[in-house]
Each structure stands twice: as C-alpha cells, then as structure tokens.
Image 1 (cartoon, rainbow, N blue to C red):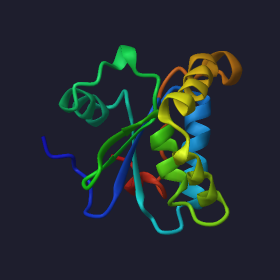
Image 2 (cartoon, rainbow, N blue to C red):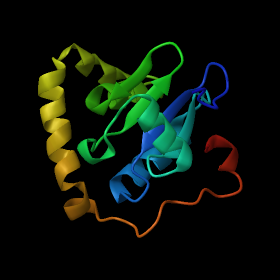
Image 3 (cartoon, helix red, strand yellow):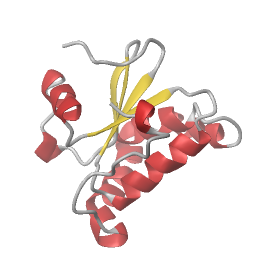
Image 4 (cartoon, rainbow, N blue to C red):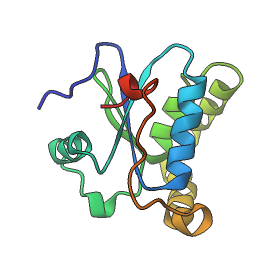
Length: 138
C-alpha cells in the first residue's frame, strides 16, 4: 500500500468522532507553522487502509497514530510527543518526555483515552474540514 501523502509530510490519524481528538487536531493545525502534518480520521477509508496495512486492530486501539515515511507508524504518547516536537517553541519542549519509558507514558495516555468520551463527549460523525483546511485532510 502506498499512503497518499506528500513527500516530507507526516500523517496524523485520529478518532474523528472524539471531541478531545478533534480539538487536538485543530490545535495542531493552528500551530503547525512548518506545514508538516496532514490528517485523516481513523474511520475514513484511508484511515482504515492504514490500519489494515500496519495490522492494527481498530477495536484494540484508542490511540492517535502518526505515520511518516522515514519512521513508519508511532502510537499513543510517542505519537503525541513526536507531533508536539514539530510545533515550535515552547510546545516542542514537551518532547523531553520521550525520555520517560513508554510503558509509563502510555499508562497515562491510556487512562485519558479510556475516559475521553465521558469527559469530553463525542460527535455523531467525523469532522468535515472547512474549504480552507480541505487540502490538509486525506
């Protein structure tokens, strides 16, 4: 499978019905000054193809995913920290937490992921990007 993404771009795959995830994606879009990222919902056709290609069980994943041609796929807290590392100062300082072992970071990540619908709610359908943002979504 060839993931349809421009060279030197990274793809963020997110839960399209999760309010926390959608708010996070909006934050990344606003702060992505280098235009590094492209986006797709896990529920989209491309999202499903990526999950299938990397043999990721959608029912077992409460995770944001980050795909880059050079690094492959990153999950959970690693994906989130790699994303903020590209957002410029001072947000990129959060990447220091990559030195914390993944099992500790992911314990916190999983706790938030497990409760995200209860705490932040969810939409009935995936976000539809505005015409200005449409080029950033696959």
